[in-house]
Image (cartoon, rainbow, N blue to C red; front, side, top):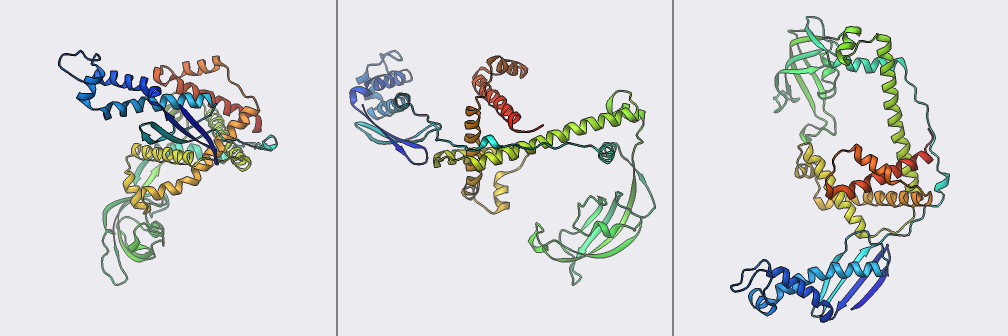
Length: 414
């Protein structure tokens, strides 16, 4: 077997292999045996068909193609192990010739990574303070979930629920398509309508009719309305005032399931709010640390690796949209780009992700951050039943998560 390994720029290696027939023979025999199990030839049991009979029945090309499929991964694995190559993406193979079998692959290998000066990174902590205003706003948001509405003849104020009829007209007085609605519900101040519309409702009351002009934003989603002046005619059908529940022990028991005083409830809100804000600030610290690692990380990145990351990001995007009931094709139409355009746009972010990933791994190695097996086992036990085929993947994810958490603990002030 003739093997040539050539180191390339951008952390890639080119492997070229040429086999003599006798070195390829065991793969040919294995391929023939596998194929013979799936064919029905009179006078022979499955898997026991002689090679010459099988070749006449299915053709030499089928056997040789299957043998090639068996040989290439076996040989590549042997070469990679012998040459001690840290290949990090499954190589794509180019077959140069079939007789003799000769193939070539260019594969990305683990790059040389430098993160000089990482020891000096220190992300400062910030004391999280919760004010009475924060607590009041949180409680108000809870109350909004239990709001009731009482019809009123009073003038409309911000926060009122309004039902109205409206229609829009251009400057010449012609009705505009898509600007008419009957019994349309609005909560004034939530800015669900075009800017300026809801403000013009304030001060009106049930039964009132009014006219006003608003200018649509220059970036409005419908081009024909961008920067367009539209005169609206409105009629107020109904006005309702929000009636929020009083914060008392009865209400607290209703929402928490336990009897507490208002004072104790506020303390609980303060504690939960503080925990949430600390968690959010921790995420900001982590992101700041990753950005500093990105600035320091020096490495060559294979284009193959970048393209693999782009495909993964694209897959993530499609999966996320599908879960939300959105169509990926509709998204492309909205942003006026093809899938290939999007791939080009994602390349920069893909390269950034890769640099951070390798930079973090390098620091974890230098800092000798280890995870004990018992920690992994305990974490897996907490996750409940894990399919056997996913155990290795889950174990790697847990290990990585614990290591990164400990890395953050070393560099992020608390």
